[in-house]
Image 1 (cartoon, one colour):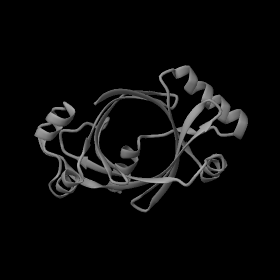
Image 2 (cartoon, helix red, strand yellow):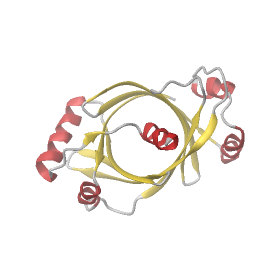
Image 3 (cartoon, one colour):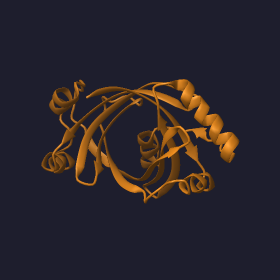
Image 4 (tube, helix red, strand yellow):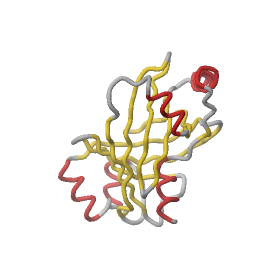
Length: 186
């Protein structure tokens, strides 16, 4: 349920995405993030349900730090049934559910804000498991690379590898949820 997540997150251009996508084996898999909000959630926190096929996962993330594209988060998640997923989409996530399922205290229920579709390819690139994402939401398409690793020096090495092998500099990316909510507010 609780997890300390440490990952490199880089925004890519469409060209950079294409260079890396050529290395992927297989077709990208669709996952949809359903984002929720309430007045008591800070900008460095996020609540979503991720749907991959018929698997649903309720997730809470709080960003602890972000430096040079490496983001460290407190991530808490739990699987939920398709029935509960449908129910939550209609009425939102209650404060009680947040406490019981994720051990997160909120003062009011969270309501559905919208969704973001990610077409994700996961593959090995040299020594790293890469997650290459094409994100589609609210009339926006963007591209991102993510790589999770417990050793931050490996994430720095990946950045160097991307630059020297592909010419990819990649800016540190904002979390998908933050990009989604910025687009929603426009």
